Each structure stands twice: as C-alpha cells, then as structure tokens.
Amino acid sequence: MTEKLQKILDERGPIKKIGVLGMGYVGIPAAALFADADKFEKVLGFQRNSKSSGYKIDMLNSGESPLKGEEPGLEDLLKKVTDAGKFECTADFSRISELDAVTLAIQTPFANPKDLEPDFGALIEGICNVGRNLKPGMLVVLESTITPGTTEGMAKDILEEESGLKAGEDFALAHAPERVMVGRLLKNIQEHDRIVGGIDKSSTDRAVELYTPVLTKGKIIPMSATAAEVTKTAENTFRDLQIAAVNQLALYCESMGINVYDVRAGIDSLKGEGITRAILWPGAGVGGHCLTKDTYHLERGVKLGTSELDYPENSDSIYVLARKVNDFMPNHMFKLTQDALESVGKELKGSKIALLGWAFINDSDDARNPPSEPYRDLLIEAGSKVMVHDPHVLSYPNVEIEKNLDAVVKDADVVAIMTGHAGYFKLQPSTLKESMGVEEPVVVDGRNVVEPDVFVDGGFVYRGIGRGDKN
View 1 (cartoon, rainbow, N blue to C red):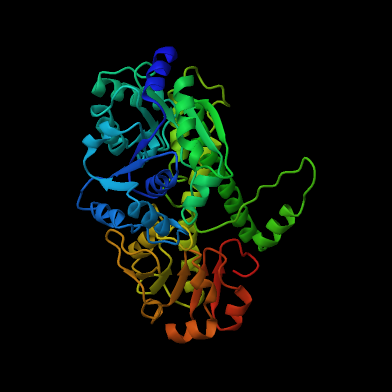
View 2 (cartoon, one colour):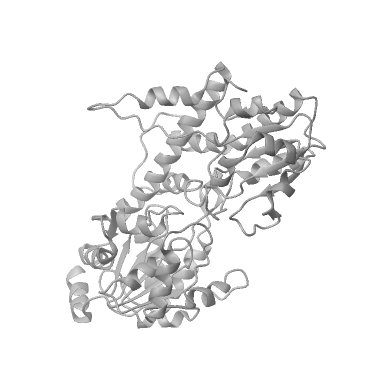
C-alpha cells in the first residue's frame, strides 16, 4: 500500500497549497503560520457562510482576527499573510480539489457523556466535504481531538466512500492533534512538540513534511494514528485529573479549617532527583472545549478497543471520577455563596449576585463550557438576581454580559469571582464596598484573586475555594 502511495506523492512533489477546515481557535493560527512559511505558496481557510459564523470570512480576508481575547501576534500575522496574498478564507469547499494537503480543526463535543456518545456531526460534514473533492496524492490530517480509532475507522471510511479512492494507496491520512491554549496560540503551535500519526509510513512522512516548516522550538514525534489519538486525549485527561486532585485537596482543607495554598506550597517545595509533585491550582471549576470532554473520548476508545480491559471489577474510572469532582466545583461555589449570605442574615432568594468572569480562562474571550454557567443557573434557580461582568466575552447565548463593572456590582449583596481576569486583581475593598452600597457585602473568590485579610478588614464577609482558615 505505502509503495503505491509513495510513488503518487513523489510524482505530485512537495506540498505547496494547504487548506484548513474550521476557522476557530485552532484553525486560524494554524492557517496563518502555514501561510507565513516560505515553503508553502497558498493557504485556504474554509468557513461555512452560516448566520452564526459567516462573518469570519470577511474579517479574515481583511486581515482581522475574529478572536477577541489577548492573542499576541495573531492579528499582525493575519494582516501580513493576507496582504501578501498567501492566505484567503472561503466558503467554497470545491476549492479543496486545488490543494496538496488539508487539515481539519473542527470541534468534537459530546452529546451524551454518560453513554459515551460524541457529537461528530460537524466533523463528519467536514470530512465529507474533503472526500467529495479529494484527489490522488493529497494529504488529509485530522487535528480535532477524537476518539481513539477514529482516523483509521470513521474518517477513513467516509473519505474512501465519498472519493472512491483508497487511503494508504491513493491518498495519505494522518492525525496530528492540536496542543494549544487560548492566549498563546501562535507560540504553542510553534514551540510545542508536534505529535504526528499516519495510517502508514508514507502518510506519517507526508504529515511531517507539512508541520516541520511551522515549528521553531518544537520537534516532531511520529507514531501511529491511534497512538496519536490516545496521546492527545490522555494528556488532557491527565491535566483534568491533576486539577481534580488539588480541587479535592482544597475541599479537604476547607473541612479541616486550613489554607490549601499553604499545603500546596509545602508539597511543591519537595524537589530533587526522582521527585515529581506536579500539583496545580484549585478553582471554581474547569471549562473550555477540551478538558470537559476529552476524558470521554479516551473512555470511549477503550470501549471500542481490540481486547477486554483488565481493571478492578466494579470500580469507577479515576478519570471519570476526576471529571465529576471538577464538575462539582461550581456547586461548591454555590454553597459558599449560600453560607456567606446566611452568615449576614440573608437568603439566596431575592439577593443580587455580581458574577465576575464568564470566560473559562483568564484574559480571554473563550467562553466554551464555562463553569460560570452552572453556577449562575443554580443561583437563578434559587431565586437570586444575577448580573454578569466580563471585559473580554462579547456575547453568549441567553446570557447578558455587561462591560460596566460599576453597574454590575451596584446594590449587589455578593461579588463572586469565577475568572482570574487581570482587572479583578486590582479590586480594592473600599472602592468595591462603596460601589456595592450594602452594609455587609460578601465576596466569594473562586480563583484566589483577592487577599482575604485585606477584604475582611475592609468590611467584607469572605469565602474562598480552599480557604478553610478564612471561611
């Protein structure tokens, strides 16, 4: 199989024209970096001209980024490559036939985590669009985080059915998962090592050719397609597990009346040969597109595995349990809020809560699956009036997000901090108390943003994640 494919690839020559399907947090910076590489002549970004996201096409073709969080260098790079004629965004998927390589960076959420049923609808649509326009010698790379086995299973089957071509014989197919974090997209793509897994050696080699020119510090790590899929889902699952571990420790410390940050500093201080203490930071919950669902992709991959899993009988997966702990943290924020109000003789019903921070990560506009949402829902269900402030998030379905902080905190009984935006670290108790205008103001800190003693001395009732010494 590889011998036939290799001959076709050799006849086609080096990769010159690239397509990127999905103009989001992964696809936009990837397309810009491909376009900026001297080895490539042209990059097409493919975006559906839909009511919800069609606006991106004109913005990108004008060199403007539709991502409005802090993304150093991205808009300048987009302007550079569009002005040079090396990047263009289009809704015409038939132009895929012009290309040497196509990457797909399309979200893969879970419709039902309990039943391990992913929502591959958007990804399948993208794969079908590629398959309909696939030509011999092209490289197709899935960058989306996917259930292990998807590249050599569903994706391969769809591409072959739509094109009439054979993967590994007529075209190359690989998985090269994205490894980016909002706020540092360009840096991550260039400096992180790139996992590349083809369905055969020729596919892997062709994918290595595609990604090598955009790397600065990062190196290529080749492996099989399925191993690459497991690598991505497992690294996010491990991070989620680490967060859950420190979140559970924070709950323990609250119960024992001590400060989790003291304990964390003590644990982190033990260093030396053979010692690893990768302890993260506790918080009000985990959000975003990746960590909230990649555990389920990994679990589903095991269910679809080639042999039966050998594991303690009737025991929960520690990874799924970690997901439950992190999903619980907004509920704990709700409890802290309730307890604080009760300490000043108030109830949730009828109280005003100023919720600071809707994005799931600091100084970003990324509001995918934010822990702020379940917290807000619990408050509203309890009869609270909730106003939301976020300096970066422009809009969110069915949620009014204010930019005027004074308007949000005015007459608020509670200020609840759900995101560690830089501006919130500048909050002063005297100014905030005056703006709130209530006799016994409450601050509930989900991100260790405010100094407890300073706010308590300033007349606030304080509650914080893991702060058993102050709650």
